[in-house]
Amino acid sequence: MRFTIIAGAFLALTIAACSNSDQPKDQGLAQQEGQNKEAISGIGGPFRFHKAIEVKPGLTFDVVSWGRGSEHVGSYLILRSDSSRLKYRTTSGELEGTIVDAWNMDMDSDGNPEIFIQSKGEDKDSYLNMYVYEFNDSGSAQELRFPDLTSSTKRTYQGKDSVYIKEGSLYREFPVFDEADTAATNPTGKKVLEYVLRGSSFSVKEVKEEDQKK
Image 1: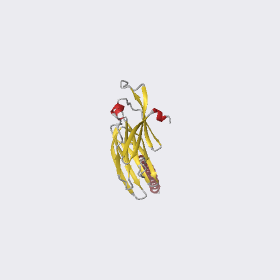
Image 2: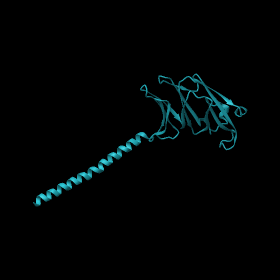
Image 3: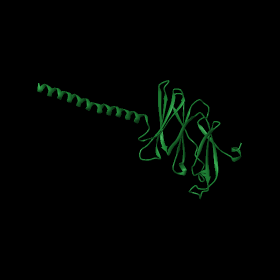
Image 4: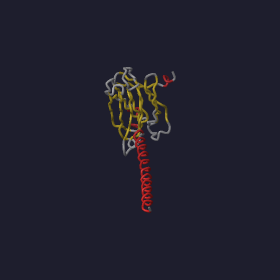
């Protein structure tokens, strides 16, 4: 009789111990799975920037930047997802600076989207960088070279750019400084440049002050 009671008590303790040891294990797995899902869905690690650009239903471009060991040098990635036709393409390139924004346009009105990536650099010679790609219906990408500043403009340029869209054109506005003002403390005026895309080439012209007031 005594043996039966001891055996029963031992069996009850064993079941309770197993039940208690299993419970934290299950909770740990559930917590780990939740963390994994969060890590996959969020941006982190070597990745610095992500923006999803929906051009039309079923056609989305994800713009991502990444890089380890530096905040101002890395790479960018454009992921084209055509879920309606199950076609996926990848375009990548070297990135100088930190991505400020990315957006879609069709500046030349040919029906093919252009993805613009705007980055901000450290020094005045690369303070604004624009990476532009045009995608045709099959998903192939063509890089469009964004015009550099002229040598005379570079001498008075110290960054601080504003980029905006107006009536189908891209505008770039920035203050200008005397060449001796290396600290960029006293602007002497501002310059506005208008960019137009025809075919696969950009043209650029300076917008005069009298034209800005119209």
